[in-house]
Length: 303
Image: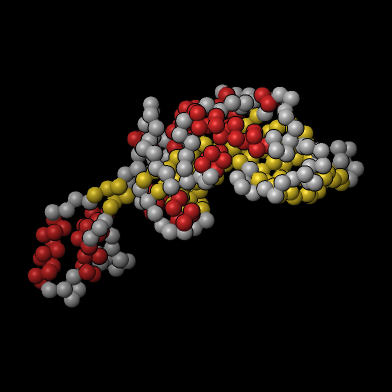
């Protein structure tokens, strides 16, 4: 239910941090630049980012103190994010692992309760045809996001709003480079929108994560989509029937059925007309209120 989180913190790094790092940690030093408070010129700060190469957990801050932590909770708990966090116990276990990993390079926090979440990514995975999901959402607008959808890494679609984004893609394609039947939909929340959704106030600090509140927020956001029904076509007669129903024609006003029957025997044309007369277009309809039940989780789909 939750993938990536980012946490604002204030912890001292162990003394001589770059000298005592294990082979599992990679350190990157750099200098940030900014304008002096009085506007008199440029100033720089020595900064450091540490990454746990096993889990991908990252910690950043000054040379002496950590200021933020970012990680994928399923990767910490399961080794990769093709599996999901499915209850409060797993969420708590993943956060415990996060802080155990942070303690490898930081001194114990004086008060861990002061940590605040600044980014939370609720997520779920659904069994289905990713291309059908993409087609249904291609011209779909979200009621809280003004911008239209953009292509995502050649694998899906992303809607980018102000402190809110939604990404839909083929999870098997991303993990294994082969198209599959697992549709992953990620919501990303940060800033005032995150605080408002979870605390009820744009100024309230988010210090604890409730699994079911994450699900409620995810459901509320996903129900902001109203995807268009997409016809499900598996044979030529269904395709030609759909063209007749939708009135598809060339610029010259010729229907696709008339194009198809050129050079076809009268007997074949008659048979096709009978097949078409017996068909009703089958519609693939994605209804988020149905896919995401109010009082229980959707079916679990994992890789």
